[in-house]
Length: 498
Length: 106
Image 1 (tube, chains in turn blue, orange):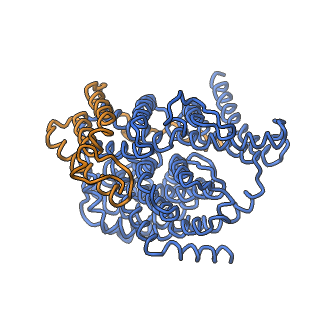
Image 2: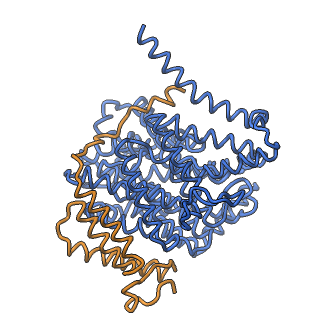
Image 3: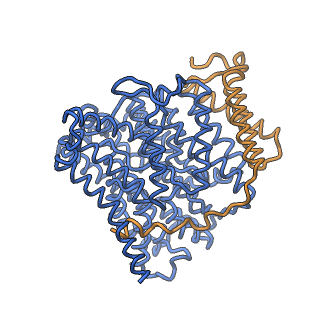
């Protein structure tokens, strides 16, 4: 009941004409930018962050939620028509979606992706509404030691357990943690790694890091290694309408995928990559037409797309209630909160109830807007896809530099951006994931603060992390997550030798 | 747990990894564009710096119509400038175009 009241109040906030307009601008711009090939949700959100500096926090965050959702919707269009997944979570969609498009079924593929995203997004938002207050209740009992242990757990899952290789994930994470140290130490005021450059005293902004790694790095990589390759785009031929059979095959996939995607989003499990592949595998197993998989089965689009969106919403649970980002996009959203001096966490639900519930309500609204925006208007977004690569990347870099420059009006930030671009180029080339670095940058300083608080409470006794039951549990699970797969691999190789 | 932790690791992107040999001019054109932008932005202003950046990046991606690219870049950064400065009150330097654009930031 209390939740319902809060939510209704949230709708009152989200449906004021101004906030509705910010939401609308957010979903439109988010879709338009998210559609661009090679621009995933994380980059979209990072590039558009400077858009909001002069808005009031509620309007800005509502716009941001719109951009976040819009980028997810837009990305699926690109994935299906171009077969260039903008991020790892779209790979599963590309498997079947592009095959469908090649067989002249691009319309139904886009439709099942859009409607599936809507269904999954709406159900997941409902789950978020119900779950968030419960998590807040638990989180209120957390002290610094618990938070620190939870963050260690998040670091480990994001960097070491998931992704293509543990060492690469850890390398990326520690780079991010290192960059997080740059700037004035929040506890003592001492400058760290600033090298006397005033622009660095503020620390490295998540916008500069994310845009540098994603946009500049990607542009350098694409120009140097792929710009001379021919590209193909599938046309939308025939109707957008899904046949009766398409519907019948899609809706169970949507629902199952929501069930898979949402829980994965809520735990720190590194975003939407696992649930989308899991959903793909489940649909393949359950489908009555398994022979169609690999040639364009509609369940293979419906499931992963829905899972992707459900998990994107699930990510908001730990972000809003605990202040812990579990994907690169969430880390950038957290950066947006911090720009307004807001630290997401359990207290936010009390101190800024208007803002939080307005944001949650705007997710419901945003989903509806996106369905309207994406289905009938898909033709416009397809036009966006046809922008030739040279113009596309020219435009992306104009926006990328704009974001970095607007921070301090200084060319130093542009130089930093270029340096991160070179780093992103190298990471792309050597297949090192970028997300752990972005999460490390944002979460590192928070973890440090909690660590030092915990130690000052315990008067320097480091055992505090092991004697508190909740904290000890988190750390134990973290240790198991690292050790068990390693042991299993060792056993497997040992057996192989025998 | 094994399936969760490692089962999805070895699936690459479909048809990903298609790349040609390192194209040095492409790499340098983009770098040059970014450095030119750095040098120009505080002095010539956001719009002109953006146009130069746009043209260099397009050149790096294999476009050969430099003048058309510069014109497109000019139009885009002008639109961005007007949108951000006049509508959203973001502070950007007008530079040499100050007499035309009026003062930034209003």
